[in-house]
Length: 503
Ligand code: CS2
Image 1 (cartoon, rainbow, N blue to C red):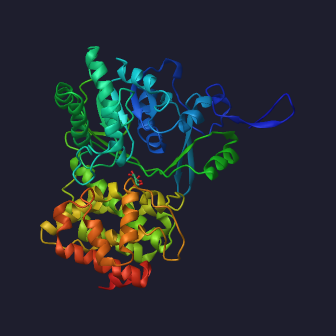
Image 2: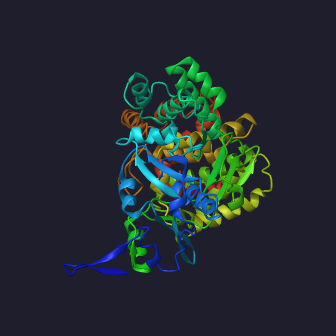
């Protein structure tokens, strides 16, 4: 749909509240009056995942008629999403991409978006607004300033040090949450519930400890208040959502005739399991597809290990072997055979029974999701932040396996692939960027150890933020990682993998 301007040029109509009626009927639109929505949630980290997942469930809650759960997004890093969506009245298009095409939908649950670096005070105002009863977060694993291996607050983290020293507004996530909780307490406003929607094991409980510790470092009484009075339910979130590409924007305009500066592309599958512990109330997410339970832990272990663990395996092996996307990696018969073995031998045995779930059906469905050729999920995107992702996805299950007398040999190969990945060049010699909060340290280790597998494994295993001492000191696991790394370096990833599968 184009609009003629007075100067004679023609431009594409941009998504906005006023233009909604002109958007094609094949796109689903908010079926409720957005002007009567009031904010009830502040969401920190309004990236693609949040906009494909909890903002959509919440959009359905609003459509069902409960209007006091609008979402105020707060981006802790940059103004980019705010600036893209402001001219669109915070509307965006979700393209649900299945193997046989897209289903489009305009999501209306965001009532405002802020950029924390330049609107910190406004963010805190929203967080202390009595109408805000839940603060949800998707800030990635590294956003919580944790020691990934122990899950405790990394007190030496520069952002934590800066927030403890500063009189200015906090910049870290623990700092921001603590400041808002403190302001509410002082103003005698009932606390909000904190819902952590990132891929950490026991995410709510873990972040609760991190924030309580940060608060205690500020003030012992405040630390106790956070520990005793704030609810941090655990949750398992799932929907594969790659970063939006320019091609996605162009395709949207070409197919539907309007412009959206930041649409989100996602897969059809979605799952949300939430621990039902919301003292300040919550939307009725269970009426729109979420599962509210007493104990999320089995669901969380199943998802973190089987989905995210396999994803990380596909990412490190895939990047080194030259597969750009998960679907391309999964289409390789050796790689998919390896993923089956990783599930069967090392991961599935560590997952407790999951209510209402057949784990074989779960992994079969995962395989289908990974193979969805319409979703271009880059292996390099998943490979980011390995130091944070490896512990919950692969190191913890490996530790459980070796404790039980097993050998975790498939995990040992993935850990070796990660170490090979850290060199920043794939088997064809093409360079890529290793993006990780520990990248300086990892790079220094790589430079000083060169290609000597034994020295490299020793130096990397000594990083206790990734490898808890018990796994670091496990001789057989360490030997297996070293042998795999030597094989990958000598033969290349594909040959090493093929030989591994023959053994
Ligand atoms: C992925 C996840 O980037 C990654 O590390 O493993 O983002 C994954 O796509 C989601 O957790 C799926 O729900």
